[in-house]
Length: 143
Image 1 (cartoon, helix red, strand yellow):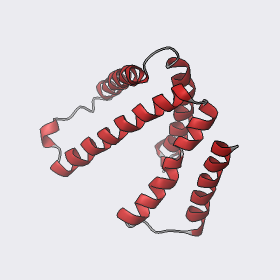
Image 2 (tube, helix red, strand yellow):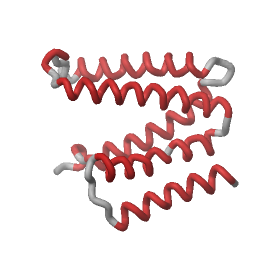
Image 3 (tube, one colour):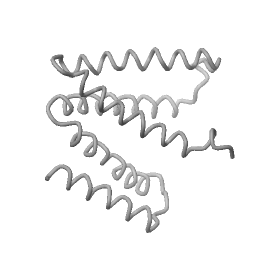
Image 4 (cartoon, helix red, strand yellow):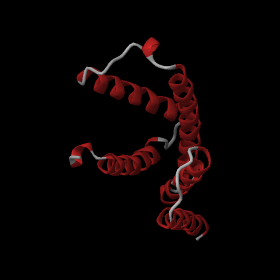
């Protein structure tokens, strides 16, 4: 598989853009309602995603999608929206250097959920890495 099609490249891109999200979000919520900031961010994401779909000619009829895809995408959207609302409020109230690492506890939670609900197999590197993420977030939050 070519690097540009690798999950690792996209995961690293996700990490980079998530870091920029924290920085820009912290600067953006100064002096405005955090829920309004989240709404504006959501509109921008909608427009950017629509633009990418258009440029790549990847639009599809929603009626052709399986029901289970709709269900889980709607649930994912609800979870994302609630996460963003909490994240922007946390950024408004606290330092980005503490909020962002605590937000990344989602990685450890995703590991646990993957093991419990998706039947993913645990490994020592996975478990040790998850524990280190939690330990790092605790150290950053408390000290």
